[in-house]
Image (cartoon, rainbow, N blue to C red; front, side, top):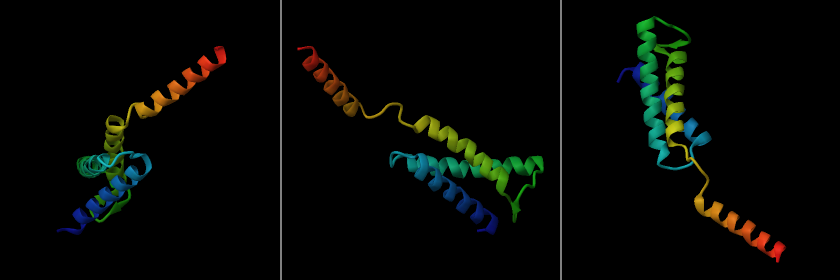
Length: 107
């Protein structure tokens, strides 16, 4: 395996694990973040190759463009996998406590 490909994979996995440790809430999101990071790093590298961008290049890997591509796809992955609301049982319990308190206060 060429060193550039290995470095790109390590960079992608590092970014995926980092984002999951910051914003990931469920274990099933981890493979989504890792796959998004891998796709984003390689997409960023392809864009860098076609545009000729050589910002912060390590070997053949353009780290800035690869990280930017990964950030874009990781942001999309987070947007589509983030929970929309808090746990419904907790919300129901909280609402029931408030209703019971209001009934006791009015009685």
